[in-house]
Amino acid sequence: MATSRDLKRLLQPLLARRTDLAFSRRTLFFQPFTHYLRGAKFDFSRFSTTSEATAFAHQLYNGQDCEDMNSHKPHRYLMLHGWEADFDKSASTLCDEMERSVLPAVEGIVDYVEHQRHPRYFGPLPGQKVSDSPRSTFALALGECSVGDLDSAEQRMTLMMPLLDQYPVASATDDYRYSGYLFWRMAYLTRLLQTDRNKVLPLLHDWEAHAVKSMKLTKYWKPTPFPCEL
Image (cartoon, rainbow, N blue to C red):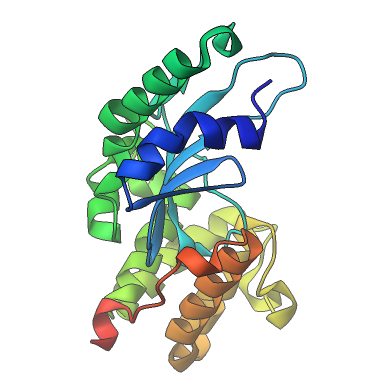
């Protein structure tokens, strides 16, 4: 099994020549990052000596406190068995795959407009519309909030939430502000859009900070205004 220390050693040639990359807690990512964390997460297994790196793009202001790996057929790289036998060769191969194939797939996803242009990282599943997917609906509504289109965001969320009737908007009090359940955070945002819009952008900033701090990545983060605040 490749430990986090092993992976950092394997990736050191890439990290040495690419100051825009960093590695922490089994995650290789672009830095400094603002509203989106993009990179590759290495899985962890007790049953295999290999690790699989999976590309991801995390819309940080959705409040999720760990890397968002909910992608449809994302770019991946599976380390070969026996990578320990020739460490230098394994490092060269891994660095090359990360730089040429995996990382470029998510590098440009820096805002919600670019996020939508990468359907395998935005969703919904092939053949579905955004309105068929609660997660994609939430991502789009958050993006609309970030550019100040609160009317559209409210309409989008108001149409979605009745389909998630186990998470009633009226019950989404401040106790659910940092809920680990996506649907409760959706309900909470919807309640603010319907009742107190002045709190929406502060919420998005708060969710972003909460996500970054939870992943212990604060030193790599550059807090910035949303487009509608510029």
